[in-house]
Image 1 (cartoon, helix red, strand yellow):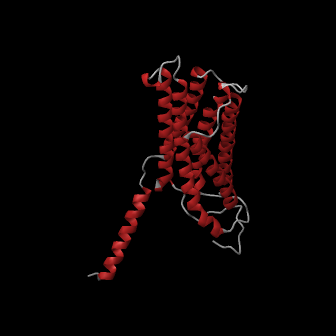
Image 2 (tube, rainbow, N blue to C red):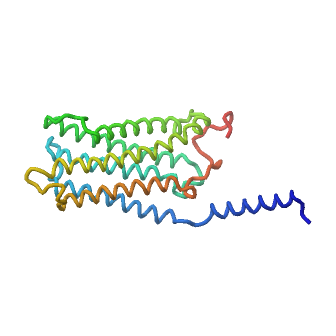
Image 3 (cartoon, rainbow, N blue to C red):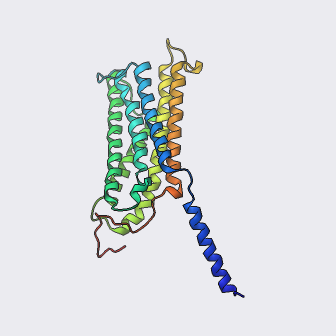
Amino acid sequence: LPGPASGAGAGCSLARRCHRRSVAMPDVPFLPFCAFLGTLGLLCVAMVGTWCQHWRGGFSLDGSSRTFNWHPVLMVTGLVVLYGAAALVYRIPNTWSGPKLPWKVLHGSLALGAFILTVLGLAAVFCFHNSQGTPNMYSLHSWMGLATVLLFSCQWVAGFGAFLLPWAPTWLRALYKPIHVFFGSTILLLSVASCTSGINEKLFFSLKNGTTQYKLLPAEAVFANTLGLLILVFGVLVVAALARPSWKRPDSDSPDSRQVRGTLGG
């Protein structure tokens, strides 16, 4: 009869097999989920553009309210949709093998593109406020938005220094990686909160004095409220995808063509 040691060994072996099976179980397929998320993101961009074009008068660079309309379009496109796409780069199964450098560059480039659009969006609202004599940075929405952009700036610079510069030591990358991941999700949630509060604020400012009041839910209010809900769903789904263990890139010794080998080891 097998002794206690062999029984314990068999139990451990069974536990390992069960663990491997649970990890390998095909849950929600990533690529169809990603396609759905991309469609949802494009829908958010299309809806914010439609809102500003159809109900808010379109777009211009003359300092009028049409200049302001660039602000929601650029912020939703950059700070939510493009930023969300950048966050999901390492969840694509194709990135799990081979050199990581091309994917690092793609991740950083998407984040940089999101940041550029965000800065242009801020420039649009400051230009509008200054031309109209409206004070800047007095509302909760503006404080939250600026805090989000500042965090985003720090996140991008720190990520560039830790993961793309060739002289960043391995221990620094390992130390900073969980911080980078945490603030990535945090910034996305703050972006969603900033955009939805901005939509709400714009509706309160616009739907009064000669228009159907917000509380009566005119077509514009229903449309913009729906946009806000879709932005919220997009952000929650991206964060859920980032938190799903089976979609995370395995921590392996896959080659990185940029890393300096030799003395650092790893």
